[in-house]
Amino acid sequence: MADPTPVIDDLRVEGEELDALVAELSPEQWALPTPAAGWTVAHQIAHLAWTDHHAVLAMTDQNSFSREVEKALAQPGDFVDNGAEEGVAKPPEQLLADWRAGRTALLDALRAAPDGARFPWYGPPMATASMATARLMETWAHGGDVADALGVTRTPTDRLRHIVRLGVRTRDFAFGVHGLATPFEEFRVELTAPSGELWAYGPEDADDRVTGPALDFCLLVTQRAHRSDLALETVGADADRWLDIAQAFAGPPGAGRAPKGGAA
View 1 (cartoon, helix red, strand yellow):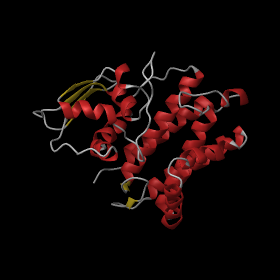
View 2 (cartoon, one colour; view 1 turned 180 degrees about the vertical axis):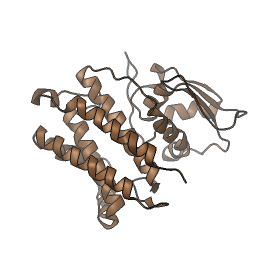
View 3 (cartoon, rainbow, N blue to C red; view 1 turned 90 degrees about the vertical axis):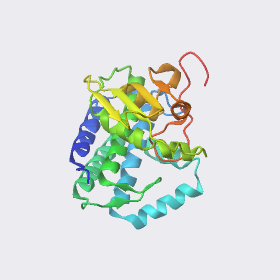
């Protein structure tokens, strides 16, 4: 059973680094557009606050969370945007306070979770470590959008290992959500960490392979960059197809980002 402590600790640090980016923003900066169409900096933080709140519900009040799932099923194309809009309607200082309180509640719930627990979500149920990993992935991805809006260049860290692992583990989900047959064989994934370490997954003799920088893989599976703008290489038709559809997040397929200098 995986010890969730390392990823919970890294989730805390990821949230703190994003908090440092937005803590002193002016109202005009909260309203800056981000690379996500129609979303401002405030939308990005509001979405994280909304999702953290729902994660806490999933871990502590599953009846209430089930009602939220029913709402999502009733409005599958709008419920994420609607959740963000609710937060954007608040003054920035209130939105920031709510996000901070939600992060604290989430960390407390993750640390208090009993061994072996599994929690419902908008995709497959998740163990504690998986829930923490999913929250770290979203915090990093939406934090990247905020940084882009503010003109800030973030230095990648080896906290990306959690997102890489999630991206590899969600391979079959990505094929399934696109209505495609899941490849029978495992892929070999070899990625270079920000520290220079090699992170490898899957059998060494696999026919299908993915190689490249871990940062680029994380940008791909969070759909923060178009594949054509990334230094990822594949061997095998199935691995090549995967990089066109990969997503590490629950829910329907995302639209992704257009390649730099052209339409998708």
